[in-house]
Length: 167
Image 1 (spheres, rainbow, N blue to C red):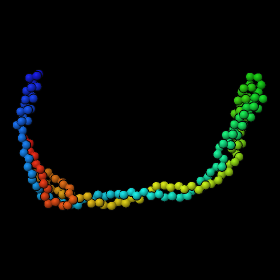
Image 2: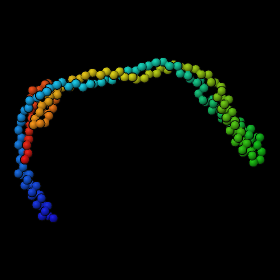
Image 3: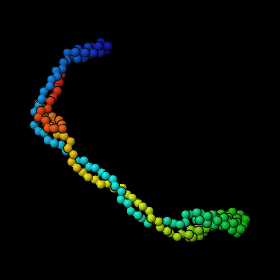
Image 4: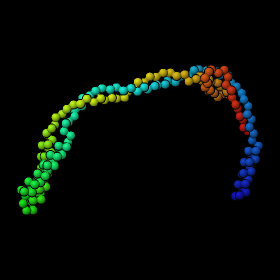
């Protein structure tokens, strides 16, 4: 096994030492040169705004919660007075629940005057504009059956090549 591995390493080293590379420069004639453009889209943001009347409830919910609390306490006290024996606890809880609902409804119906206030609302929109932008010249040439493309800032008559041949 070791002898085979050493032999393979010697063969690879020997072939790499005998390999050679030739490099040279050449030029090819351009057969077509044309300007290239790209479409560029610019988005400019702008805001569209308007005034809007928004309803504002003058009751902020505090009275609603206070009414529910007072109704629950009053309902619990009345339920405790009405109930007797082992049903006293159930009557107290039931009275508290019913009192809470009644107190919340009564306080919710008061002070519900709706007023309006003006609010400024805006939305961002975009103005899009497209234009053609010059990016350079596309120069095309052929070398040994292969198409070569080179971009430049001016039309070219010839394209320089650097060719390397390894053997």
